[in-house]
Image 1: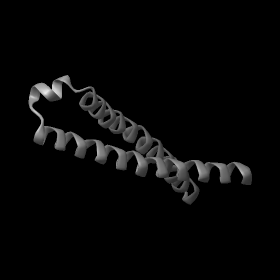
Image 2 (image 1 turned 90 degrees about the vertical axis):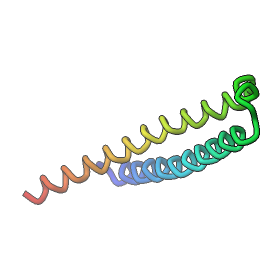
Image 3 (image 1 turned 30 degrees about the vertical axis):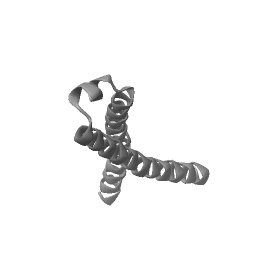
Length: 89
């Protein structure tokens, strides 16, 4: 892999880590908003609230996105580990 490709790969991995942090933050906010809504709204109000549905969807989307991003970073680390193990032989 060329030096330029290695730099791009490192930048990509850094962006993945940054995304993980941002998505985690967004999910925490969505979960907190959901808890607050449940604390003061009735079940009927929650069911009728478009905002509550969006908050739930955001939380679920964040969870799925985190899994994909973490899997991608883990895959990269696994490839590096396998490569390092093969180089030691």
